[in-house]
Length: 257
Image (cartoon, rainbow, N blue to C red):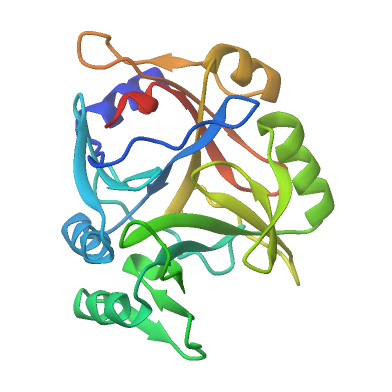
C-alpha cells in the first residue's frame, strides 16, 4: 500500500489559485476529488475550459478551483462513468451558464438534454457528469458546489457523514445538502443497485482534516501513509463509506495556495 502511495506521489497533479475552504467545526473541508481518466491531456483541457487553474504541491500536479482541488495522477482505465455509481454527478456554480456551456462543448463536453435558463448538465471526460448552476452574484467565474451521492438510505448516510466529518444539513438554493466546506453533499435515494466508485472515472472524494491520525482511526481507515517531508508534508488514509463511495482523508493539502 505504501509503495503504491509513493508511486502515486511521483506521478500525480494539483491546482494553484485558491486555497481550500475554511474547515467546519469538526476540522474538515472537502479538499480534493480524484479521478481515473484514459486521456489526462483531454481531461486537463476540459477542466481548464471550466475555469480550473494548474497548481503544484511538491511532485503533485493538480487542477484548482476556488475551494477545491482535482487530480488524476496518470492515465487509467476506468470501469465506468459517474452514472450508476454512488457519485452520480459533480456540481459547480458558474457566473455565466451560457459562456461555460460553450467553452465545455468546445473542449469535448456533451450537453445533456433538459437544461433550464439557470441549470444544465454536461457529460465530461470518461462520462463524468457535471451539473452547472448559474449564480450571477458569484465572486469568481466558477466555484465548486456539491456532489450528488446516491444511496439506499439518505438519512443514514447523512447521519454517518455528520458523525464522522461534521456534515450538518443546511438548505441552499432550494436543496437540502450536507454542509462540508468546499463541496457539499446532496443525498438522493437510489432506485436500484449502485456501484462503488473505486476504479471508476470519479474514483474517490477527498476530505482534508486537522489530524489525519485521529480521524483515520475513528473512521476505520487504512494505515496512514506519509510523503517524504523533504518533498511535501502530506499524509493520507483511505476508506469506503457504507454506501460505496471511496474516500481519501488527507492532512497537508491546506498548504496549497
